[in-house]
Length: 229
Ligand SMILES: [Zn+2]
Image (cartoon, rainbow, N blue to C red; front, side, top):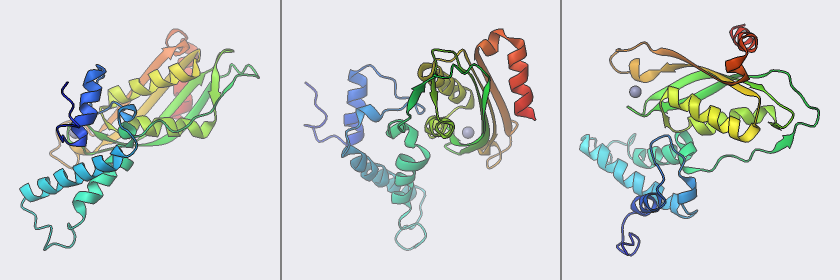
């Protein structure tokens, strides 16, 4: 057996070996929390900090002489693992679902939710606004309003591609809520086209319609009108 731990491999290699053994994808926007054991998160932070230090050195930055960059490698490691990309390394925040006892079947809209993400291509911020429309069914699970932004934040806190982010979020909401339909609109500014050379438009809007929002044009119109208003 090729045990990466026995060979003294870095913790990232151990986590990677588990993912590969399980046949699981680990793209930038995949959550891999269940493959990381609790104490390993700190070890992973140490490893990222050490490698980030190597990047700063390769950029010929005097991190000893320059007091501003002395702790940068560690700060970036912490920021990646616990803040901006926490949706990869941490489990979904607890969300209590409750049955639709009142049998609500009216369109619910949550938003605008502030979205903070980063593009997978350059790791540069994507900042935007998200609206979520849900048409519950009698069998649906409901969650508190504030939970929608927590779920969205968890999905967005990964290196993302806007089109895939809305799809991941729609999949998750469908699986958890079992609604009659779910609709999402995400409007975002992509700093990789503002901060770097301008190539594409910087503002992008994505919408995704599932279930009743696909089949019922009136419902779709009502949702889009409320979002635009
Ligand atoms: Zn980019």
